[in-house]
Length: 313
Image 1 (cartoon, rainbow, N blue to C red):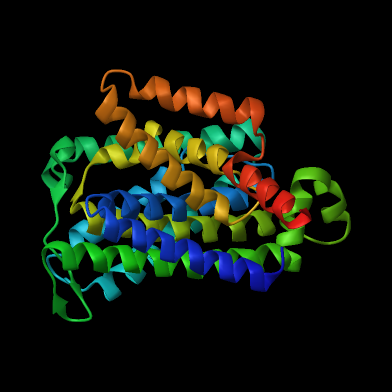
Image 2 (tube, helix red, strand yellow):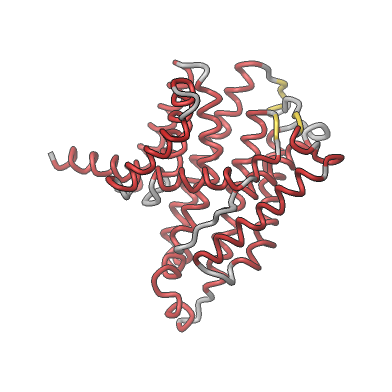
């Protein structure tokens, strides 16, 4: 698919999200959460290109959400909170990455999980600071100095999330096509050759890891602004499992996959929980099983095949 076609498809997808949020107002919050998680999953896509899976990626999402929660009463401006939270997650990603990029495969994934659970435990135990499992309630933040309420506030957060999704989607697309992105793919198949060529596999993976943490931080900031309530559950292993679930569901073949998977995941969960409240997890599991068995490329792979057939016809 050409860059022009990808740009057009991305703009049409963003317009479709806005149209759906306008037609069904209560879906505005669901779609905002989906966009926030899609940003975090976009980082997992980068790591998957290197053949690595992080089972603790929610660490960076939760870290940024708590930065927003702590700073919102002092700095209630979204355009300032967002970069501060993203930078905080990127710095944490750099510190963690310097350690975890030394490892590969299951060791890489489990070390990320362990660090995420350490952070979760700290959030839960340090009640005097984090309020434990009760979490922290955020005041509404301003957008460019404007104090918004009700639907206007929800629209502002959704539009901000869509702008970030389009921007980071384009950035990741360029990154993967760059020499650094090509080297990242080389880690999965021929890491020894990279080293023989004088390319440090650790540095390549570290750059992707920090970028992934940055995007997860943006997702965490959006999530906290949308829900206005953060709890330690954001860093729990099930939250990281959700992100991996979404990555598989959407497909790692394109930057569209994470957002497509996130929207499908959130919509499926909402409707499944409303229809069969006691078995919605089983429905999600069945959906994932069907995708793995019959569509290894995920929902994006299915969509791409349909577009190809239509173009051929």
